[in-house]
Image (cartoon, rainbow, N blue to C red; front, side):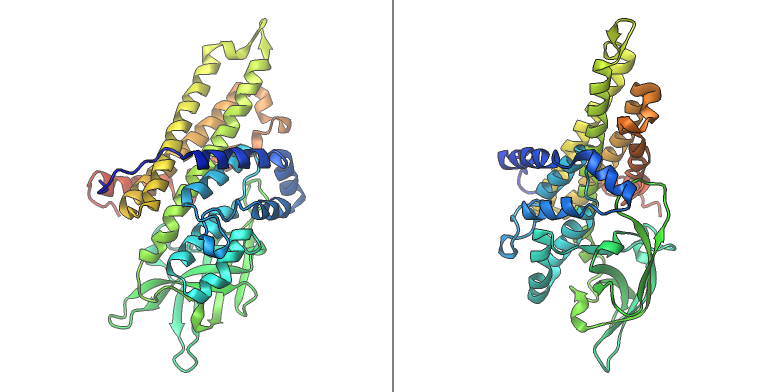
Length: 392
């Protein structure tokens, strides 16, 4: 347990932030988001507007134009946008993962270069760690970074898969491996690669998920980078990754609970007005109990997400890691259950486009898989929470 008691109930300031974001999101909503997805457009207007309002930069330090808040504040923004039906996937990547890593480990020059743009939304950065033959096993990453001693440049070679939004970012923070100077053991390191770099290319992955953001395979063919492309230390190991991966899980959990809230709200509204045999179908326990169960599951997941954010902000990184994995697991289950029950409550209308649930079926299923599968989350909890032997 932490040395001091850590409160994880939300402050009045964060509650006010939620209210403000919810009102802001009403200007866009699900219709705007779905239209962008169907038209093949990006949600550029929403992103730019959220940046101008300061919502994207709530967790960026104040000296770089941000709000100076914590990851819990950014997660609250993500949840409210998702609850309104207009999520911004790259919030998880750019200000949360990349912003957290650069704020903690970047040089003064790197912070000056990137953090102001993250704060006002004028910069987007991708994040690339997953590989086809590594998956959740980040120790098995094969993308390599070799130092050219004559020029001081780094040369990166390898590939990544399921990388979000590469077509709409200017740079990607890539996890590669360098040869440790003393042992020769490969250890992960982080590099910012401009997407227009020679040798950098990407290919879209066709998947059946509805959304404006796309997924890509990234190819690195002897990409040459200057010395200052390295963020943090070349041989610091996986510690630098956790500065971004814990916020990633917290953000993913918040997005999932926002999706669950969206589905539940649709089902509640529908079952109150849909009448069969002279009464709303919500009067039947077979309809109301599943929705109540999803409400309970969602609220419990929200509480665990708030606890994970509070622990992370307090510097309790191992406890935050456990709580973040718990939150991500619970939120993914809550989202899948809520969408399934909402569809069932609508009957055949649950599969009609006009009721806004069809696209949530695939998207909710994704919350169990990404950014970490529920099985890997349970592995973490079993090992660190229960003290059970490592299973892999």
